[in-house]
Length: 215
Image (spheres, rainbow, N blue to C red):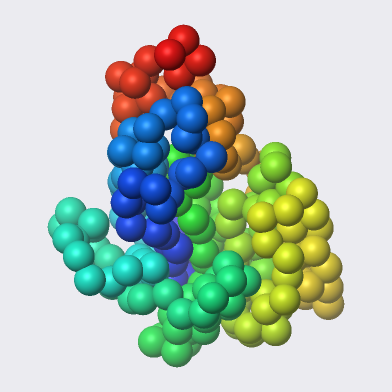
């Protein structure tokens, strides 16, 4: 296990109508935002429990209530328009703060564990990059020993081919692969993730909401 790597969580403030919109329906915008808040909390817990050189929360809106709840995170704002730009500049901004490798995750994988994160950080000891593919064709984690915006800018995001396109951008680098995980995108994937991680805040919140299909 290494503490030489920075871990960045890229997230949106969980505001109704702004997050997890593919969960509505069957859930209301307020319920979808509550699920997003729990997923973010689970992610921050996992990152906080992982040895790291630094932990950063990159938010789309910096102003507002503290979302870290006393956990050891530096707060930075997101830059750019599309997701490719926000990812690229989050890497760059973290690396500008300290010249250390960067691992980045989103808030869509509440089943994330410190063990998986530690595997990613250790991989950067002897690889240029580490990549966690998602079942929807995207990716749930990307780590770079020396971040370069050109590795991300222009990659088409939120498509079934996003992961493959991102991997092509990593050609020429040594890449460590992590297990494939499911991101929370819709009701079906939310229930799949909750079943995989039943002790998370996310799973508890989903259970409280009951079966959306029965509404």
